[in-house]
Length: 195
Image (tube, rainbow, N blue to C red; front, side):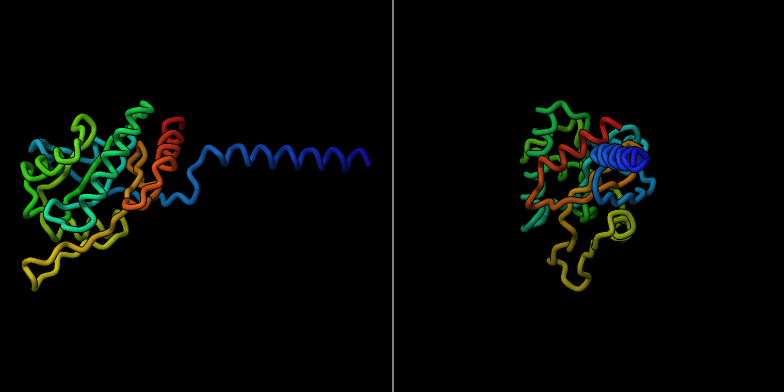
């Protein structure tokens, strides 16, 4: 009888330990590796994966000529940036242009300034071909990036997610970039900070 109580106690203790460990991990992590890259930012300065290593990053895919989702997404990212700063969380922000032929550094900077982007920890990336970003988006972020070929006025089709990237360049989670779960993202940034 005493042996059964000891076994039951050990099982409960083990379950509590496993549950406690689980609270420090991000649920349903994607764990996609971000490919190496180096392009230019809104200041025409190089920025790449090496600049991300050691930092937590929230990334998204946008373009300045967008008439639908990109402005709300960028406004939402700006709000997230302000909330993270308020909580003094060590995180940087990254927006890849999905229309690089139109989005030169000056155009990106002007767009970003409309949303009060803090360039101290937010880079807007361009300097690659349309084909490159279409393949990069699919391979790394598992999302479509397609610029319709037959209509020069058609807008780029792309995903609307925010992506949380850890200090090793691993995309650990994606979130809705329109109806943003701000507190969840901030909690997950805190988890990565504590690892």
